[in-house]
Image 1 (cartoon, rainbow, N blue to C red):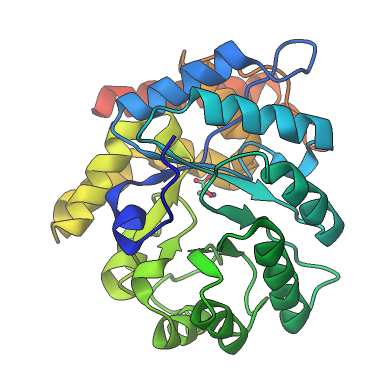
Image 2: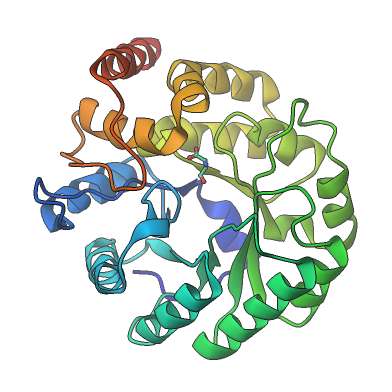
Length: 303
Ligand SMILES: N[C@@H](CC=O)C(=O)O
C-alpha cells in the first residue's frame, strides 16, 4: 500500500475507485472476495481506492471497522493508495481515529452528514480529527453549502486537507455557484469531481478539478481510466463517447440507489461474490437484478 502523503500529482494519477465491500453469506467481511474486487480494479490500471459510501462504511461496527482496515491495507498492491472513510457522526469518527493510529493510511475521508451540522462546527470536527490522527483529511462536500468556502479555505490554508471530494448533485453541472466559490479560493487540483463518471468531464474541463471518483469504474476500471486520460489529454469528443458507455448502469444507479446497485453489479459482472447488503440498506428486487445484468452486458458489448 502506498503510504506517501497525497500531492496534486497523486490525486491526478488515477481515477479514485469507490468499491463495494464484500461480505460472506453470514454477514462477516470476506477477505477472499474483497481481494478479487481489489485485483479487478487494479488490473484496469486504477491505483487509488476510496472505501466510503459504496462500501457502506457508514454502518460498520467499530470491530468491523478494524477488520475492514486490516483487509484493505493488507490486500492492496504496493503502489495502491487506499483511503478509508470515517464518520459521519463526530463520536464515531473520533473512536475510529484511535483505530486508525494502528495503520499507515496517509489520509482518511470524513463521510458526509447533512443534519445536525453547521459549517463552523464541521470545520472544528475536521480540525480535531486531523489533530487526533496527525494527518490531513479528505473533505467530502456532498450537500450544497454544508461548509462555507471560507471555512474550507481556512482548513486548506492550515494544511489540514489532503483533497476535497465535491459531490453536489446539479441539474446542470456547468452552473454551480458553490463550486465556483470553492474553486475561486482553493487550488482546483486539490478538488475531485465526486459523483462518478457522468459529471467528470464538465467538472474537470470547466472547473479545472484535479480528477474524479467512480463507482462504475469498479466494474469497468479500464474504461474509467480511459475517460480520465481522454479528459487529461483534452480529447473531449473521446471522453464523451466513453462517458456515454457507462450510462446503462449509471442510470440504474441514479434511479434505484447507487450503492446497492453497484454492490450487486459487482457480483453480476462476475468479479466477486459481494454477499448481503448491509442494513440500513436493502437488496435490489429480482426484477432489478435482471436490469443490472442487462446493463452490464450492454456496456460489455460496447467495449
Ligand atoms: N458516488 C460516485 C463516486 C463515488 O463516490 C459513484 O459511486 O459512482
